Length: 112
Image (cartoon, rainbow, N blue to C red):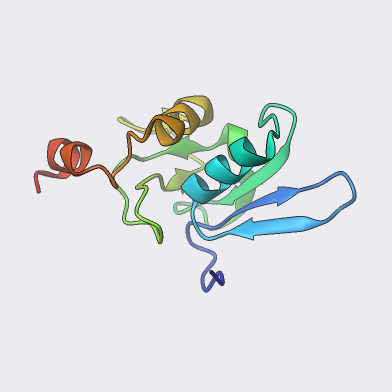
């Protein structure tokens, strides 16, 4: 899927400087897992919704209720706020399927 907007995009930069771009942080998490890439050692970045700039994905704070391109719901923010979660928690939730793609989670968080 082509990335049409910076909003919600993420990227992985390999040691050979090859860049892989994603349209949703959730897609990046799943891709890293499938490739066996340790996110703790990876050069990964997200484009923030609040400051409109690239920051390290592991330093971002994630909402659980944003409308993201692939529907995971994890919008990235540079500034912390109530109900935003750290990268590692977001990553585990994506891998466990605890995202807005799950109708039960969507109803619990959004009411529909």
